[in-house]
Length: 315
Image 1 (cartoon, rainbow, N blue to C red):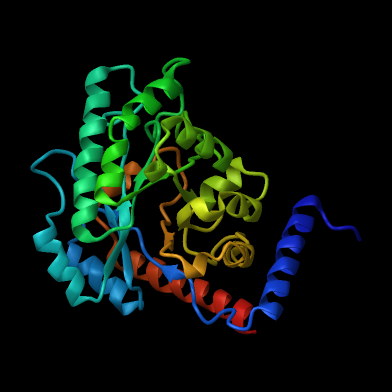
Image 2: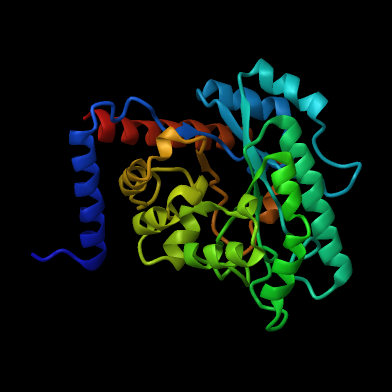
């Protein structure tokens, strides 16, 4: 029976992966860097979250970009000792762009708030040693466009902070998000166009997300290959936006595509973010976490991913 179209694409990635495995003597010795995005833990105490990640054998944490005002959010002098205690380093910071903090807003006051927020998070990211700051060109939870000029406003606003990314040595990582959640930049190709419009090398990176890719891209593996060297972080969740291995996501194809772009050799991360389905995931940041469920999400996702990676690279 002839393969379906998506199967043909997956088969090519598999064959290329196996060829690379056969011809590269050191293949698989260096593994992918596994992180975890902590904003999905809601209002849980930071120490509790860090202790959970340590129990799972995770070494990196993507920190919630929660500096919504000058007196709000994590303070490096308070959280860095906690991270040290649990053997954690910051992979990067997850920027949070709601309708009140929207680079593409019609209101100049809201765009100024978004710009000020980016500046605060850049300073924070540098102080905690993060590699990237995640950027969303238009608000999450607002899928309907304000008008036909959002792109221009978003580019113009972010451009005002572009020099600071270079000054702080932080990678600006644009995240393509499905059209059910935001009005701009839904694919890797659109993210590239957006970054070219901003016109700053430091804002030239991509934060992928396999959950969004399954809605907007023709094939997740091919989208990873298209992102290539620009990819610095990849959010993970299964097809049900839950624990890895609990749905029908082809995790093997994701891993193989990452190895094909040499992702395991870079200061780049795979970062589960199992938030559950819905059009606006942001309310999760204000929720009281179910500790037992969070334990399950972390332990099972980490175990499943590492086992699939081991089977592919060592089997």
